[in-house]
Image 1 (cartoon, rainbow, N blue to C red):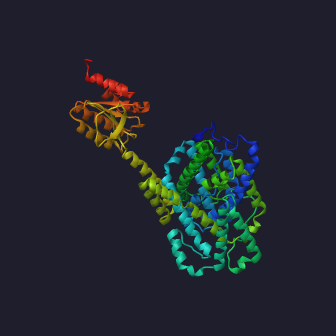
Image 2: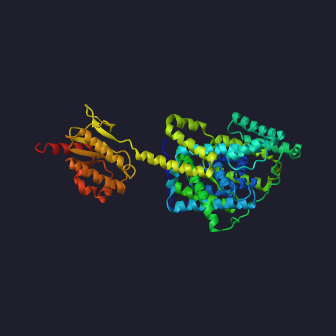
Image 3: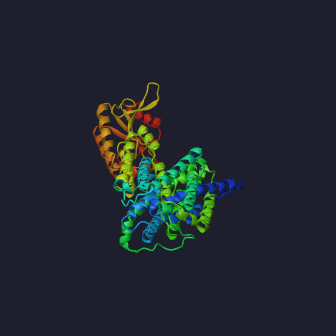
Length: 568
């Protein structure tokens, strides 16, 4: 299968890339996919409001204007943008001590975070920072989302039991649960178990069956018929209907507030960037479509602007929602626009029945969302295939659970960068040798043999920069010591070197001096043009000579043989 193609738009705001061209024969399937997705997404996004700490109707708002804006201005035909558990959890974690959950002040701060995330996303597009999407490794993402899943699922247990818990964070929530266990409401537990059984049962029948929708509709009907509120089962109460009002977040626009929220906004920005780009890339590869990370940045930025100005919280590219649409047959943003229309009808005409929805039912739905985020399969695969990376994933999950979601994403970024640096710091270099039948192959540096008497070919397998230059110097010294006194040429095979920094340039000049003192010539093989320019700029070429660069192994060997036997 061909990899995903990246289509770079000529304009800042290219439109309808996720919709055009329209396959008319597939329109009925697209519309049906949008209807199916609406049935699955509506109860899910209402559940996300419990994570984010905002009113239930704001969940519906996330799949109204924001989803429509990305469908029109994004490039991915598949990415679904809406409420997401990770960014909702980061929002709640940051705002927990700043305002009362669910209050108008709290919602205004959540909308302000969406506005700040939108500004960062659009700024990233303007200055070309789409590549930052690659700075969260798959390993730390698995650990991060697993930690979020554990935190989210744990946080919903009190609601499923009918217990009022005020603690923030996983440990505080568990402590509250233990202290107030005597408040457990058995009718509430019965509602929670019923919802769990319906959702899990429908999923076992078919993943396409909208189990959460059936469970929510059934429990609303029972709550209305049997007056659950009179039995001590807490219900949502009145849910406002009508379109969201367009307005800027009603907050105190002070510099101190922005400073306080900036770390959270940056964390949300990174999660949106990494998760959305990874999802777009995966589905573009699956269906051999084109996409542009930079255009998607604009679409995501506009979607979050829509969230900020319609009184809801941050939206993100969601892998779970994207899979819902894809499995239902959706192959373009037409499916998402269909969902928008259905949600619009719900907001205008069907919010009345939500009054009877038990809080425990939403807690049960969110609990299952959290469980789904716990990626034991992914952790097991990492453990089997890359043991050191497994501990990185576990450490990331532990920080999310024990410290917080925001701190977890920062920790994940730092670990990703450390892991990247670690790989570059200890590259797996080798020497190239020739077997008796003439084939070239590599051998470890610890047992270096010459390619032929007097010539060593040393392969450096990473970019040369300040962190690994000492390794270069040490290995050159070791190879020379083990091949003296016959060694006359030392060749650095640089096909894997795509960059040389100032420190590496200084080190190469020092290596040349070391070799020159032993009457050994330093030469290079397979140097990229950009790297050659850097070596010229650092003065390395002036030392070794312009004839010290060879484009093929045969050219190198012939030149060495001529230098060794000048009379032949």
